[in-house]
Amino acid sequence: MPRQPRRRSYDQHCAAARALDLVGDRWTLLVVRELLAGPRRYTDLHADLPGVSTDMLAGRLKDMEGAELVTRRRLPPPASAYVYELTPRGRELLPVLRTLAAWGAPELGEPRPTDAVRAHWYAIPLLGALAELGAGVVQVTLDEGEFHVRIGVDGSVSHGDGGVDAPDARLRTDSSTCRALAAGELTLDAAVASGRATLERATSVVARA
Image (tube, rainbow, N blue to C red; front, side):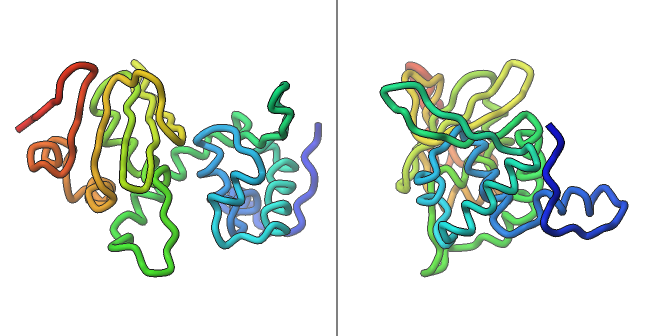
C-alpha cells in the first residue's frame, strides 16, 4: 500500500529532513516511546502522554499509520478492544530514542513541580546499563511503579511496562539513581555496592564491590 502524503514536509532531499518529515512533529517520538513497550489502547496512550489533547493524539496516530510506523488491530474476545502497535519500521526507532535519551539525560535533574513521572520512562535510558547483566528478564521496581527489560543472548534489548512472572533478576532502586545511571554518573555495580540499588537474582541478592 502506498504511503499517504504528509500534510507538511521540509521539501529537502536530505535523509535527516525526510526522517523529520515522518517523526519530527510534536508528540510523535513520545508516542513511539510508549509503543516500544508494547501494544497500547488509545486510552492508555492518552493516560501516559499527559498534556496531549485527544485531537492531537488522534491526529498523530493517523499520521503514523499513514507513514507505516504504526498499525491498529482489534484484540480477540473477551478484550475486543483496539490497540496500536509499532510496525517493524517503527521499532527501528529504538536506537534513535536511546541516543536521544542519552543526550538528554544530563538535562534531567530533579523533577520540576509540573513534571509528570512514569516508571517506564526510565526504561530506555537504562537499557545499556541493564544489558550488562546478561541474557534474561530484569524487573525494575521504583516508587513510581515497575517495568521490565528483556535481554537477548545476542545483546538485543526490549522493554515493557509493569512486572512479569518469575523474572531472572529484580532490581529495586529510585528515580534519582536511575537518573545517575542514565547520565553515566554511576555504574550499576557502584549503585548496588553503595546500597542505592538492590539486585536480586532468582535465589540470592547480588552484592558486588
